[in-house]
Length: 318
Image (cartoon, rainbow, N blue to C red; front, side):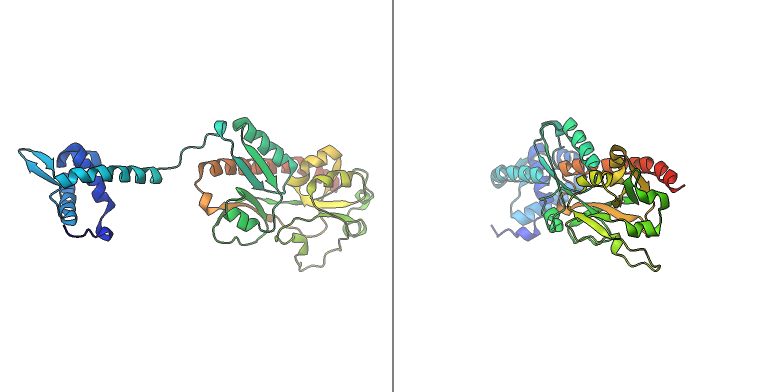
């Protein structure tokens, strides 16, 4: 027997071979495979040529396998089963039984966190959610699958190996306590007079406050630089500081602490906002599931934040 040239063997020939051995006829194999008898006969001829063996021979109206084919099918069947198993679509994700740990890098809004947590645990009571600040190496962490989903603000171009979806942009609003002295004369002078609070996010996204404008803008004096958002509401409620943040970050703190929303006194256009994830996990059922929860929750709460802030913003301007 001559040496088989594996690089010339078409995997489909092994599939046809299995069907022929199972059905015992060209017509039966053709029906199982959804091919024409002519196509199956052609494949059988190629098998005979490649294997240097008759494989199956028509005798008295039926196809009889050669001794080599009888031995070969015992090896071919488990190989094909293994290939089918490897190439089969992933099993559907079952939240009810999953104990997976999901890691989300998103510094935005405790309200988003609580809504995502409630939705996740209602459907997947055994699962765990880790809600992280975005590390400096967030792109590598997401690409490697160490973080399932991350939040991105600004125009930063993502590295290769990541996929993204845009969500509603940040709309910036200034917030002060009720009774703040700036409310009596809100404008550029008040903006520059009173100290501002800034939250430092540990990533490379440029701040819109750092952009140079064609028109001169009033100065902003930073009176406090803090590392997380949860302290902003109480700080503003108990000081004369000004905080300028996305509405989705502050709408519920505004209600809780009685803050007043104001129009920022510098030009802060809507800020591009995205979520991104590893291309390797794009089709992973569990990853798809958690992405939908987080992104849908974010988008719905962003709309709700606008409905909460906008009416009070208008009243404050009059």
